[in-house]
Length: 497
Image 1 (tube, helix red, strand yellow):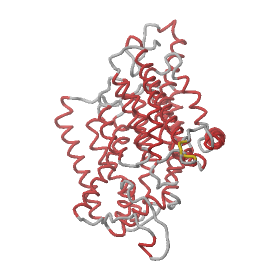
Image 2: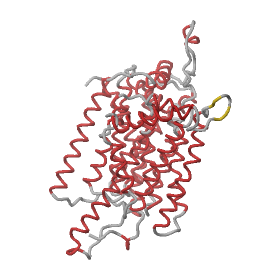
Image 3: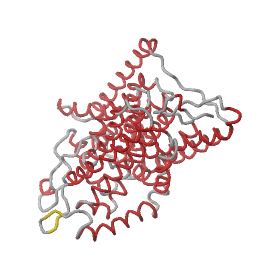
Image 4: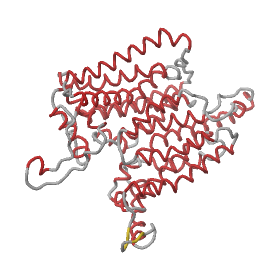
């Protein structure tokens, strides 16, 4: 292994390790502590790295291997101290749950091995691609990494919203990304600074790490929601198998993988915190919220609006039974109008005709709307960019409301998915940004963010279905035995097995 690869791996593992150490005092209270710490800790570690690099810039310290390594090492030392304090003092008074030894049949073990093998195969393939493919146009090459390259070469965060004319003289064009958040470019700057040179492939290793951390956090939360190991790992495989998500990892350099992972893990933690009795989930909400707000500007208001139904549901927590679920869902859907209006404002313009306001579906927009809907049908349900994912989602969304359907968490997750889709598609198809549907920007990026939450909803529905089938199969023999209740249910309403 070359020294360049060693430094590249160091840049990947040190922030990851520091974040995992720092969140361990909270992660150890969950049923899958190592997965929880590695999944959520990854993003905490990289966020702290970015904060450290911003502090260096404010102090006038140049970005070099030594300065970046000092920031990473400082957080690792702080994490080790936190771990030592937790083990010596806190854990005596608040012991963790610890990992629960699984009791699985041969079929379950075979399924677990199969899903783990498929995930490993995906990770190996993506590692090869990320570590060898250079940056590709357009946004990865032109919007994000151009700042990282300038900051690496100069050793500081110099302004980058400059035109070609400013740099070279003559005619050129401006790159209007100087106001974009520094989170993504600083990840690449730190990698290049550690390596001591600009490598257009190895600077993107954190993208592979973000994908792995997403899967780890997803599995940990699936276990926290009561899913078996085969089901939790199978859900992670389902998430990893979506071609569009894997494409964003392989063609690293875009911000969307990070937005997807952070928003997904944040939303799942908020869902379980509000619908269950696990107050420890609020820690992940508090930690990940500022990270989500610091990655990318444009989708942030839509993401916040999509999570509001969960917040409203929590406000109705004094209500009991199905009324609470229906009330939360109704209020969540009522936010669609607010979200669409916000979306129009966010995208910049309404479609206008002759200087006046043109409502979607009237006049020129109507002529454009039908072809746009046809394009959505082709890109989501016919072409291979998403595989069969949207067909699966169309099946699972109504099942979340049939019978128990996974309980309150599944129904609330379904509301979040519907609100997100309606806000995104409504704001884009009803504004001048409808062209971003026609050029596949929305389907290739904008819809990616809801993937983890939708996959989690699928896990909850499948778990409920499996519990129902198990209960019917053994009802004459084991009617006196009950399964642990789903989040959002009381023990008296748990499904019998």
